[in-house]
Image (cartoon, rainbow, N blue to C red):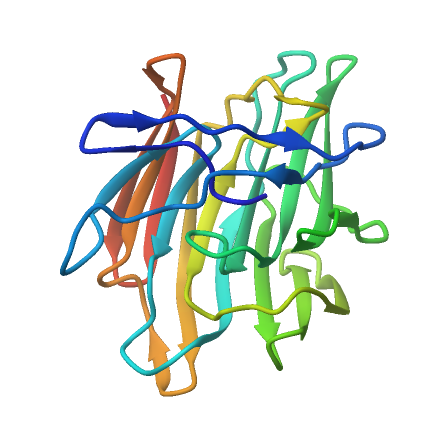
Length: 250
């Protein structure tokens, strides 16, 4: 899902976003959204607020380069069982201030008092697609990787390192710009509105790195983003080191 309504310097830029049809609470995609626009001249702001993204993101790669892969590892969260609530965690290339995104991760949703977890991939603006079953339980360690082999083709991989099982898919889509890299917890859309955001406790991405055509970088210099809805901040994001970012439900 593309980066949408952003609060910059405590000024909220309203976002008009419509979602594509989805089935069985599948992650849906924005059809139109206001892209991120930095208000700084020399560099992007260090912290932003958005209606559905929380985490860390690069607004641009090192000079003269493009992002070609992003990787991160986190544990499957223990989710508060509020019926109908949901959320997702993923890594991606682009979407922070561009029109396409290559992304992959997991989502959780509460139905009938039980939490269901699933792995998915997406090349926005196409719809997200669920991987074939990848069993996972709270506490399992999940490694997520996206690799752009060209601007229009790449690979999405989700690995449950606790069980040794993984799923991977070669996919293609609208040309990437290679300008952004992200490690995100998301309150995604269903129909034309955001789903109720599930309390996920804390998700900590570790082993965070992004590769460009000139080398590999960690989180140093990345922006942080938190979710704000109806004038209430729902998350708290902290970059703890060059390879670790923690997102906590408030």
